[in-house]
Amino acid sequence: MYKCNIEVDIVPVEGNPVISYGISEQKQLLVTEPVTLTSNNILDRGIYTFNIELQNNSVFDIVAVRINNINEYKFIYVSNYTPQYPEPWYSEQNPRWPDVLEHHTNICWPGIWHIDLESPVYPWIHRTLNLGWIY
Image (tube, rainbow, N blue to C red; front, top):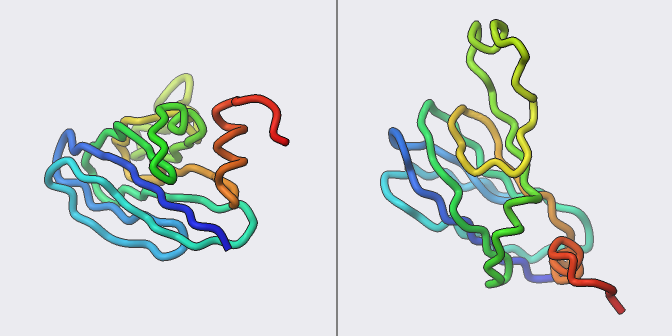
């Protein structure tokens, strides 16, 4: 069992986002001001996904991601955002927007932003930040 503490700073841009977030237990939140989402977990070995799901038509920015108190902007580069584009707008786009947006920090359609990470988390951090050989 390994400790994994994830913190994500978000800032509402337009409207009041309604989100759910977490790894295994999803918490719900109405965001009216800048906030830090915190998920404290005890995990077995394996691959886990930290999700933030936007549930309404509003916009927020992800400004920082911290894992076990390590604040590194590169953590955003391993994230993916799967928006639910509105119809008929999406069908009319040529070329079509991708189904999954990588490294995306502006969440502007309902959908899921997530980071896949591995437990124990320190070797994953080492590989993600490309810190070299792991002994």
